[in-house]
Image 1 (spheres, helix red, strand yellow):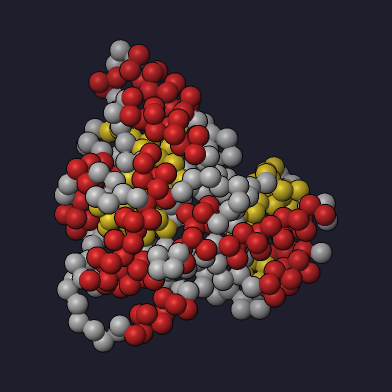
Image 2 (cartoon, rainbow, N blue to C red):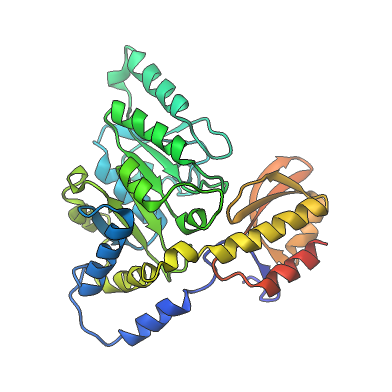
Length: 347
C-alpha cells in the first residue's frame, strides 16, 4: 500500500469527485429512476452536451471508463477486417493491455512527434497500403484514433485536426478522438479546439469524466447517429451498459451545468505551470515541455530512487541506462499546499 505520507502526483484521478457531484449523488440517492441511461438525468445531460457541442442531433452515450469506451467505440465503428491507425505512443497502442486486439481489431501504429500524428503521415500510410498489391490479404486501416490532449500532454490545434479530418473523409474512414483529459485541454490557453469543433470535425469523440472531476464515467458523442445506429446494443455486448445509468447522467449533468467542465481543469493547469517554471529555474531536464497537466522529468537513477521515497509519481520510460523519465500529473483538485510541498521536495 502506498505510504500516505508521500505526496501524490501519480495521476489525475487520485481523488474521488468534485464536491458538486457528490452533493447531487447524495441528494438523488433514494430516487427511483429507469435504468440503462433512459432516465431524466441522462436525458438532461445529453441535451446540455448537444448544446455545447452545437450538435443537436448527436447521439450521446455514457460509459464507465476510458479503456471500456475505446474498445466499445472502435469495435462499433470498424468492420471485422479493419484496424485502427494510432500514434505509436497512443493509449490504445500501449497502456490498454491489448484491449483493442482482444476485441478483434488490430492497432496500426505510426510514427508520431510528442504523441501527435500528422495528416501527412496518415495519408502516406493509406497510400502505401492501397499501393500494395496484396492489401486484400492485410488488415485494412478503417479509422484514425487520436487523443486530445495526447498521452504526452501535447495538444492538437484546430488546423491539425481539420487536416486529419479531411484525410479521413477523403478515404471514407472515421476520425475518433479520445478525450480522457479533455477538460485540461479546454482549460489551457494554448488550446484553440472547442467541443463544437470536435463535433464538426470528428465522427466520434468522448468527453472524459474519470480524470476530470467525475467519480467515474465518459460521455461518447457521435455527431451523426447513423455512424453507429445500434451503439446501445454494442455497449450491451461489451458489458459497457450500466444498469444504474442515472449515476452517469447525474455526474455529466452537473459537469455541464454553469460550464463547470470548461473551468474544472484550470486548477490543474495553474499548478502544472507553477511546477514547470520551478523545474526550469532549478535546472531540471524536462523530457519535453507540454502545456497541459502532465509534466515529464528526466532524473538520474540515484535522484529517481531518492525522490521515489517522498513523491508518488509515474514511471514513464528509461531514457538510457543512467536516467529515468517520470511523469507528474496535476488535476482539478491539486492544492497550492501540495504544490509547495512538491517544490520543496524537488529543491
